[in-house]
Image 1 (cartoon, rainbow, N blue to C red):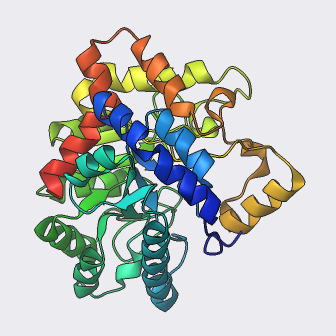
Image 2: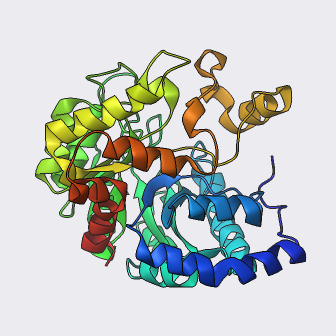
Length: 354
């Protein structure tokens, strides 16, 4: 599906603008909800975005482009993705605000918007030129992963053979990102690259979307050892809503999602756990057309045995209401619930990007 084609209709935009004052009042009065990594697709209409906001969503970090590309194509696709997302946000000012500093969350809440931060899920777009990190920072990108699933110049992804860690080039990338104030994301890294990067970084880092290896053995999950290391350096982990990362169950998986959150909180403390959904906000139906879309987007990563990726109760634009309710029922203090749902991500953004 080409995400560049969607433009909101004039009628939808008029309705969104009319709703904005009421939504803004709601958003500034409630606790912060910040999704450390999730989707905002160009085809979302104003009604769906309104439901996202009504469910509590105030800020979200989104993936800009396909992370499975290398060399010149990775760079060119990344540039185009920034331009496309900038244009989409500019065309929908009642709905979104491009966020490049932490204070933009407050601006978006006052305006009834969702603050959108930009993320790359690989470092291949930087090529072998550290000045490209500066370039993308100037274009408003505030977070990047070191690796995706495979080996790149910087380190090894979670699906790479062997246990290679952060490379000399990777250390240079970490140093430059630290200097600029670009948040390092270690989702998709293998455990050695993850540990090496946490230790190499002068700033806290984030694992924006993962789950707990101790509860479910999946290549995308994170060991207790690395979660402890992350927390010891001030980092944050976002627990994702990808069903195969959480459990083999196809029904009744919601309880497993909250088990992963609870495990992380008990292991490293409520100051270091967040929500990183890694999910679409549409109500997904497993139709032939949707399967075809997935195959086109995922390529070699598509594994039909893993689908559906969603948890039934979290399938749709109002899922944050369910998440708030479930985290509250884990029995934490209200201040800890608010940390998990938003202020931990805000804190690490404040510490790193300012």
